[in-house]
Image (tube, rainbow, N blue to C red; front, side, top):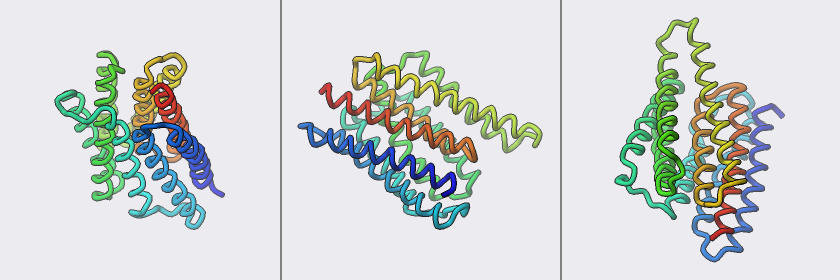
Length: 260
């Protein structure tokens, strides 16, 4: 079994545990709609991981074209967005600046994906469903007042620097490409570590369960960006962090379900 197949199996097993745990929560709650959306999202990405596992075992090292796993990932983003929107529906008037910035950031990411892969349809559709998830997350964060002004400013600056640096790699001399690439990785993983640390701290100290959900889902959202911008060993590290994020989202959802 190669490394990619092992990682697919590892994350699929983590997702299976999360799936079973969420199912138990659903069966014990009176109003489990939010949990149902989360459960379906976990089921979608778990099926995607099993798909990848089989593919890596059958065709190791061969690039996968447009396939069923893409649809599963799209479903995950839509269902996670629906999970958040059950409590805080998306209203653009509530966070105009933040949602505009999210739109620009998503378009920038899609442009980079297309430049890297050349897969226009797949990347544009992924950007659309990812944007829906991010919109729902931004509204939840605003409604719960989970971030302060400094947090929003730091996030905006980080996103702008990240997109600018990634785009610059296409135009700078070859001698500068690798250092700039490593700088992007440093920013991505430093931010991932901070998001995950914030979610863990909130699980330990925060009393507002809905805020904990925001922090855990935000950690996952940034990890998605990190995963889609990574390759080789950095991709492996991002995959491991994604498994941690799924556990954090489950623990946050369980805290909220118990508190309600």
